[in-house]
Image 1 (cartoon, rainbow, N blue to C red):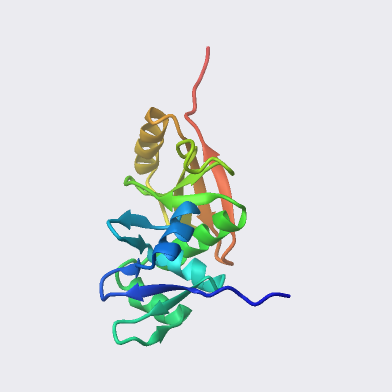
Image 2: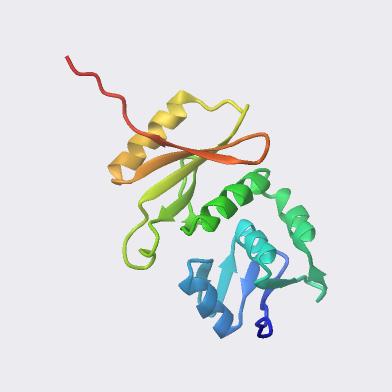
Length: 178
């Protein structure tokens, strides 16, 4: 067996999780991670947690200390109370071979691309994540579904069970015919 390749360095600058190394930027961006911003790649906390769990990255804190998985989780969960839920959904979708990108409002957590289409076609699915036992307004779901259908996308409800498993449901408009 060959040696493991060098981990990509992610720096926490006090605000963002950033990759500045050109080869790291190219490697991650080509696989659908992060948002390019001039000469750096900004990663979402759930992306970094996933990459840490896969031992792809090493996170360096503001004082040059190495941050572990729990450190990153603790740092960012105060900014996003649903970080753990988003990470579990993200991890599940990535493990199924999908490229997963940040959602865009109305409760949409993620955009998901069909396997092999990232960079060639737009996202097919929009993921609306909820936790088992937490109520969700039908009005909110209805607005999100209408918005999704206007974009010609498929809305997927991702339900995180109390055991940490994710179950997916496709949502569509109910129509009655006479």
